[in-house]
Length: 160
Length: 160
DNA sequence: CAGATACCGTACTAAAATAGTCCCATATAT
DNA sequence: ATATATGGGACTATTTTAGTACGGTATCTG
Picture 1 (cartoon, protein in one colour):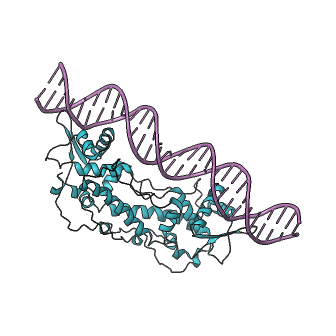
Picture 2 (cartoon, protein in one colour; picture 1 turned 30 degrees about the horizontal axis):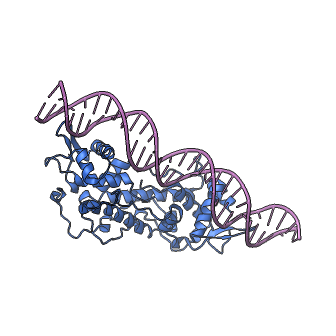
Picture 3 (cartoon, protein in one colour; picture 1 turned 90 degrees about the horizontal axis):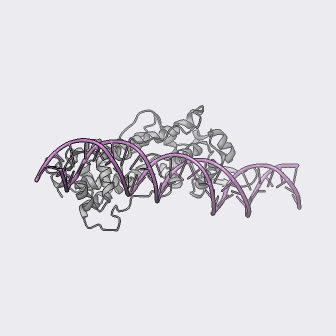
């Protein structure tokens, strides 16, 4: 949970190996060699990313792949969308749609908002950013994603 | 990927149903009834959250559960830690530890930094915040989590 | 034109994580 | 004593993720 899937990680590694369109091509086999990943896996990922528009391909002998655009114009969110599919947000927890208890269901929706908030944040991170990641670590403000109309510091309202 | 697991969602629903310690108790059966979740599932989650210290329990007849502390003092990160276990960050992608290609491996680490950044952000969101989540949605700044030493806007350095 | 190279798409298998259930032990109120 | 209710672990089922295989198509080279 809250982890980047292996395939997304692989995909990023692969993208980092590709030349930008116009500066040459790299075949799936070459990329596999450089990343130490299995060739079929690399092929699969490249195919998927091609369909997603992150990568362009050339068929035939001397063919291969290249980044569709500069690394600064490829976002982390796009990579995730391509490889993990559109984010599957948790649906309403009530099995049979019995959402009569409004305050409860609103809690479920809050998680969805957090999901979307995180995703939107990932749209701001580019492949180039990922490549240059240094050591320090800073904390984004996620509370803004919820923005309650009126935040109380007491929990009295918890009583059902 | 990047989704809140069902169990975490359930857990939040359940927490929202519990009185704060000192203001009474709710049994697993009662909570199951109010949330429309299966009783064994509710029991399991409450047991887990008790062990994690989010909830306190009283055994025996008339026993039950209560929040260990006010909803403002229970963070989203704590709920996730309790129910999804410590975040399993993607390990080095190189199967046999062959991380000779430094720039490549650094990409993998960047995702880890994003993971941690998101997690840290979640520590700022309380159960009370989740309950009052309103409609608007704001975007946290995740790029801060990477903070490159010197960010270039060109992708020339992509060439391997 | 022939053959080799390399992508395209889909279907399939395998492995792992998630979700959900069951049972027996223990503690406490009446 | 007995009914109620949590504690802990084992177990099964389901879903998701990861990885492989195969037949098809496009393009370069000679």
